[in-house]
Amino acid sequence: MDSEAVKKAIIRQALQATNTANARTLIENINEKCFERCVPKPGSSLSSSEQTCLTQCMEKYMAAWNIVNATYIQRIQQEIGNQSITNA
Image (cartoon, rainbow, N blue to C red; front, side):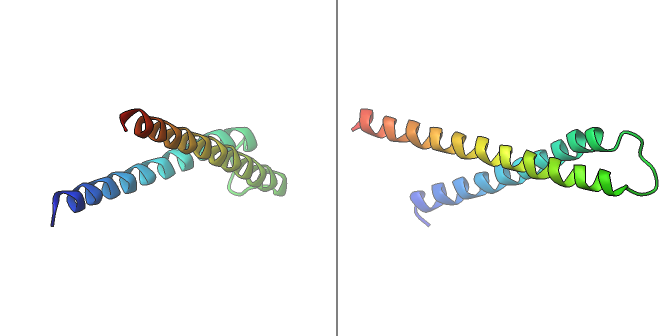
């Protein structure tokens, strides 16, 4: 295995670890924010309004998360592109 292949393998592993951590953070944040907002008095089951609130909250939170991540990735790609141009 040449050094370029090793480098790509390490980057791939780092990206997988980052993706796993990001997914865990997303789930934890959704659980915390949406549950606190939608279930003020936890009981043995959720009412239909609590279920609807949770569904809508999760959908909004994930949509916002996706927008932020897409913008972040776009920014990183721009920075990498700018560095390639200045280093050339």
